Length: 417
Image 1 (cartoon, rainbow, N blue to C red):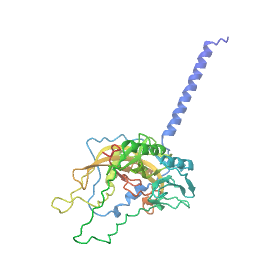
Image 2: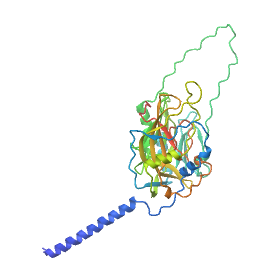
Image 3: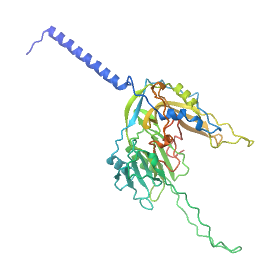
Image 4: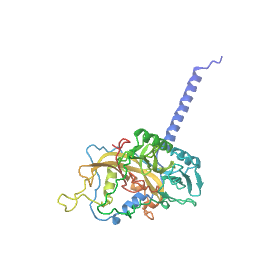
């Protein structure tokens, strides 16, 4: 048995305390280094700021909904010390694309080409008219459907090279043998067309595997389109990245009724994940609202006529009902990023239907001006720079970048009620 003197015990205890203190101090310093921004982060050339500043001359005069104002129920959150700017990892692989194809219900293997991946859908009618296309651009932009065409036989760095190939439905020809006046024409036999619909259970069973595959969790913001009929439903899912809500990188899925069962008609999104570039100081929500108000407001193409038929009814000013700190799709020197933003959920009376309230999401860059380089306009407009592929049907929300971008929506249940 070893006997230790009291002095040795005290010395040993002191040494242990010193070691523990240094360990804790080192952990705190390491954590602070991970959570705080660099002392000198590289300047940003955000497309949203450049395009917002240079957009005034491009707008036509006309009625405008104006900048939103804070409503009585809105509370501005505390201003965070900083916010992350993230860049896409460009980590898309054939295995990742194949997993997405399986989630979409495709059975053909994906084929890799210099510009991306493609997989036809055996269920298409006629066969192989619907395709899954995933580009090798920075964000791993993908689309599924029959009305988007991309030449991926060569490298693609810009999703703007993909075009919509939607073809208008031809007008039926006029009958050549018109009935003779006074003659009795036999009535054609009555055909009963079965009413097709997409139930809640069917919609979830089709959509959930795709959302799970692209990493959309229950914490994401889901926007369901108003149901124009029971035979079509759609959802826009905006993911949570770095524990923050996002705008501009949504996954969109439209489900149509078909026999023997409903299928996905159109879908789009991005497969790339995001990594931290650096952290930057941000402005307050109040300053963000002032920044939004300073931007030129887009003129409305149509307006509600006044009761006397002369002139337009002044559009209602959107009211902010919720404010969140989050991330918006943007560009830095033309390359895609997710950058800090203030997200304002607004409500307003519809411009064309008096008495109908609509809800929208408006975002504005939150990066403090001192972290910005001299704004450089992006050639060929922001839509031409690494944006998601076009979707032929109306998509709730905007997947592009830009200051003050807006996402109309109707949050609710899958039934669109």
